[in-house]
Image (cartoon, rainbow, N blue to C red; front, top):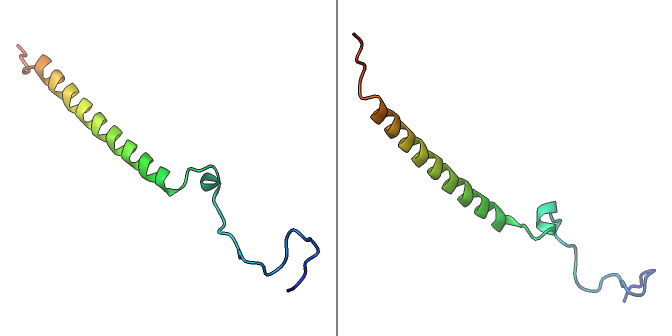
Length: 69
């Protein structure tokens, strides 16, 4: 067995290198969070689209036509 300077960290004893974690992953907000955010953005876009359609319909109902004399 090879020895290291630190008895609690013997060189060559299992493990290996750990994957470098991004800041978000270190905060337990890994790749699954991106999917959640994408889903939320899709829902918001759909809601905005529906609201705009309702606003257009209401605007068209207020102005049935141009009655200029």
